[in-house]
Image (cartoon, helix red, strand yellow):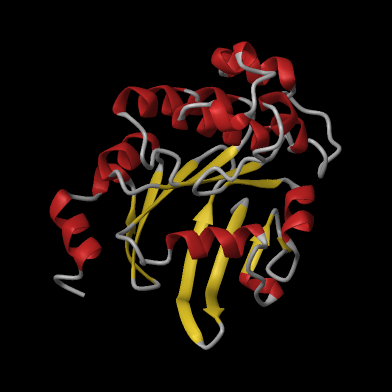
Length: 235
């Protein structure tokens, strides 16, 4: 049984339909990547899973339980945390205060606390009393990831964590993924960098205009397949 699954998932913004019958499955301890152009529905998919957008209860299941109708705080309390696109830190709080916010909604023991976050991202310990607004984009992204991990999630959703960052910073961010998986968390990554997505995922889904147009193991998917699914040449 999949740890996290969507089944015939639809999503709307008012009268506009953004997702059309999405079926995605995540196995425990694995990483799946969601790729696709801007407007493909990738962020909407994560918003639906995380409870930011609510759906019919059985459209999203987590460890066998329907969560599609739950609110974001309820989903997070169950063990699904999201690193949102754009980081969305609290500008009035310090680095450490932003991290501590992540622990409020879920009271559970686990490997992640301030010490282990600082071990994962040593730069944050050096800047722990600094306002989040003075950090670089890469440092802010580390805080956003650390904040999500502070809830000790069983599934971590990452929305465009490399967006706008320098290649050397992206490398450092992605270097943390093996440690995150070793802690017992499964990972869903939304990523526009196709090579990066394929290199870290066990399974990949390509989306276009609210539909899954291709899915499979990275080793089984050719660049031509991705090009067609990404841009719709054969769809």
